[in-house]
Structures are given as structure tokens and as C-alpha cells.
Image (cartoon, rainbow, N blue to C red; front, side, top):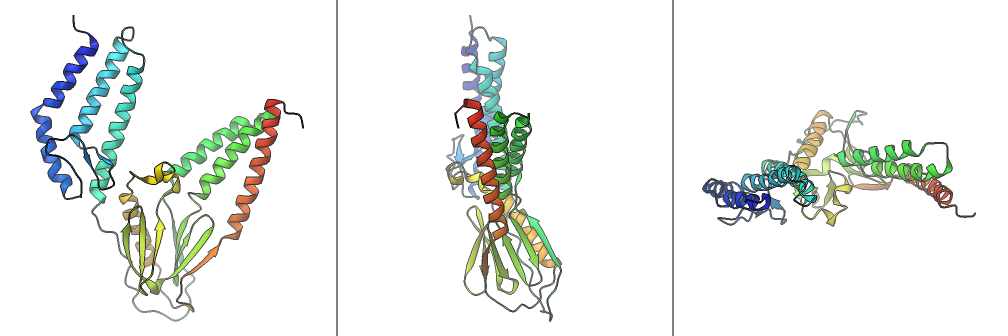
Length: 311
């Protein structure tokens, strides 16, 4: 009698030895070799130059097939197989899908040149009051802020012990906003202003030479030989292992494209100083301090109420 596990093993073995799969691997090798990817002739797993896995179609289909088998076997023969089978199957499908999507995006944008700033052209007298701005990519920050909002609403119940969740949710919301939407790129007639949570860097437009890649950041090369590296996405992405296996080529291309478009839309004008200036954003720092004090106070009061700690 064939067991579910034995059938799964035989199916996986047939998939791995399939000539079609091996041909697809060879074809994928030619596609990714130009992109600086290491991939053996008969290997299902290739790697980018930062050692991240290349989810070529053969690997994606193999992992998806194994995941479907585990999920099907786990649901159909739940009385005979470990209960973890369906969970592993679902996780495998998510990993394979996300991995393939990430690889496809990186192969499309990884070798694409960054949009460049327009030529400054003629400089007119006086200072233009026109300005345009664009935000830094902050999708993950908005997700964290949403989770914080859920905690806040869950903790608002009129009782002191709910203050723990309110304080924690408030801290998540404010923290997410600081590492996300608080960062912006502002283009005026005289400068490109780079705002992070607590710092503002103003670069005269006459000094901006070119945009180039610098791993996960973008380097603004200045005409005086100096440069500035700027982030184009949220630091939350680098919480785990400092973004060791991460790519953000699409974000770099799209962000610098928006900045270049803003610089083309706002005419460059003369300014009094030709030096890069950096200032602290005192208003943002004060807001962060007040939010930290409020969150800490509510968390302490809520903790005391929950555990009945005597004052």
C-alpha cells in the first residue's frame, strides 16, 4: 500500500529529474549571468551578488509543487500525517511566490541606470518661491502604524490597564511615522532638501552632478568632488540583519525618477551660498520626546494596573 509520504517523495523526485526543469535551469542561467548571479549549470539555486537566492522559475515551481503536495496530504490525510504539514505547505507557497516576485523585480530594475538630474541651464536672478516634494517609500512604515492604531483602539476601554496597549500603540505609530512619511525630498529653485526624521540636508542645485547606486542607498555626486548618500526607503527594512540579503533597485529607480522630474519642473535659480548645509529638525525632535514621555507614562500606568503593583 502506498503511503502519502511515499507518494510525495516519488513526486518530488520526478520533478527534480524532469528534463524540462533542467532545460529551464539552463535557460535561466543565461538570463541571470549578465546580472552578476552565480548559478551552476545543473543547479536549481542561484545567488545574487549579495548572496540572496535567485528564485528562477524551476526553483519556484519545485517549491510550489512540494508545498501543494504537503498541503494536500496534510488536509486529506490529517489523521495519519503530522499536523504541521498544511502549515509548512502554506508557508512554502508564500515564500515561493514572494521570492519569485522579488527576483523578477530585481532582474528588471537591477541593471537599469538611474534617472539623472536635468541640466541646470541658465540661472535667473532672484529666488523662486516654487517648490515640489515627494516622499520616501514608506509602505512598511504605514503597516506598522496601522498595527499601532489597532493597539490604541483595543486599549481604549475606560480602564487603566488598557493604557498599556494605548501607550505601546502610540509608540508604534509615532515611531513608524518618523522612519517613514517624515522623510521627504523637497525641490526648490535653489536647493534639493533631504529631510529625515531629525535632520535636514540642503544641497545647492548647482552642486548636483549625478545620481549613482551605492548598495541600498543612492549617491548624489557633487560637482565639487564630494558626495552624499541618501536612503530611498524606510530603515524598518533593515531591522533584520541590516538588509544583508535585500534589494531595492526598483525603489531607487522610481524615487530618483520622481526627484529628477521635480527638478525639471522647478526652474533652478541663484542662491547666496554654494555649500551643503545640515541642520537638526528641532520641531521633530521635540515631538519625538513628547511622544516618548507620553507613551512611557501610559505603559507604566497600565503595567501597574495590570499586575497590581503597589504605588
